[in-house]
Length: 114
Image 1 (cartoon, rainbow, N blue to C red):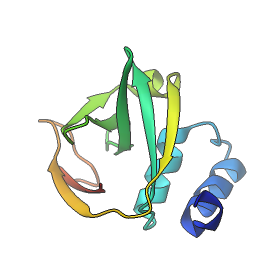
Image 2: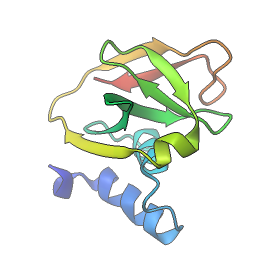
Image 3: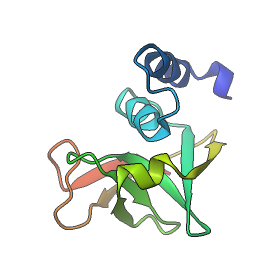
């Protein structure tokens, strides 16, 4: 699980070395950008659970709903929220569209592991 996931361990080490070890949106974004597939972090907002998908080009956080619809929330709101961590042994790749005006790595869609 987590202990055997080398990309996850690297993401946490990079975060600690650069002073953002409690910034889970940035940690998971680094993890996904470097090939991580199994760790999922959820942000609790208004008693709802949303998956953190990455950091948008403008610095806000891209979140996903249960039905894999993306929306954007302010970074500070996500940073201050409660988090839930989940490890999925098996995942598949899915391409999702981003909300209008949102880009990730200069694209209007992103690949996620579900």
